[in-house]
Image 1 (cartoon, rainbow, N blue to C red):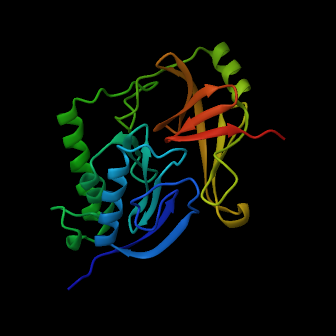
Image 2 (cartoon, rainbow, N blue to C red):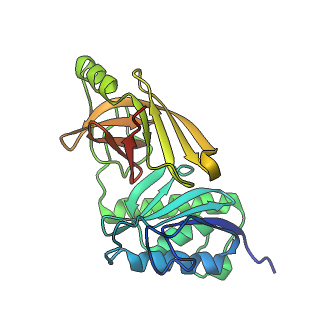
Length: 250
């Protein structure tokens, strides 16, 4: 009998069982995590969404056979992001998140399916149900609907204000300098380079992005690679996929 896939999980600001959150917990790697344990970790994270976690930012970073995923507790809600499936930032239940990551059909962690094609169809079906059932408003893109229907509405800026915005946000930003933190370098022409740090500030993941200057909800933002917004909080702070990036002073 096929035991199903295993997962690599990094716990950020979390105890090993993900039942408590504290900023003092170091990032902890767990390899070869079976589906049953992943199911329990995500369920424990969901319980933290209704608690006061102090300065902690609880997060599970999961590498599955068919992609990389992040589960966060932010603003009292469970948030789910994925670079692979081009969805991010929207609310799902713990069961729905587990189903997408593990590729299951009935919520039973022992029924995890390793086949990438089956997992892809499950994710597409679940997202279709969410769009119809939740009456989500599809965001406007420059010339066509964006691939991520969970983006907030936005509109592109005219050339002059767009140039001023890109010039003002150009620079290096980081969520922190420790293992598991992320960095974002923005050039004045809108090109961006995202990285994730490992031990001793080594770069373990990176991605090149292109940002367009837009306005969303009365605030400036950069529309990154057609599927996410980099929100401009103030002159030195950005928010991207739920993470807060602060300008790094040379």
